[in-house]
Length: 71
Image 1 (tube, rainbow, N blue to C red):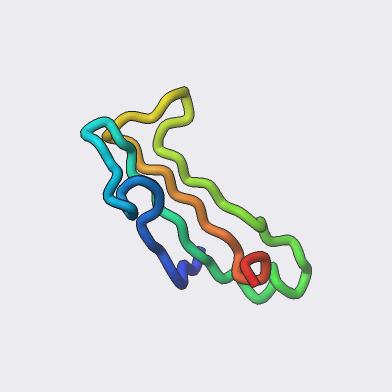
Image 2: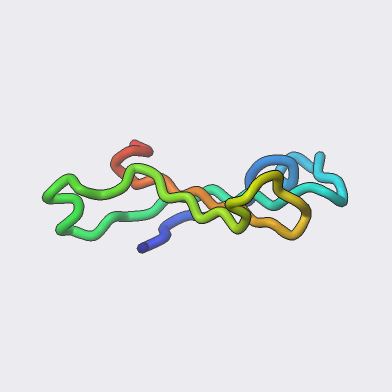
């Protein structure tokens, strides 16, 4: 995945985080040329560190949106 932008999001961005807040990351990625030409890229990619329930302070959730979807 070719990440072209990545930023902190959620409570950490707005300074509302507590000691129990997880970290949220959002970004934009550029699909490969073949994926773009064939139209078979994923519009969103989620890279969650905790897939089993409620997040805690050690979890990092990352979500990337494809550039064509973002535009």
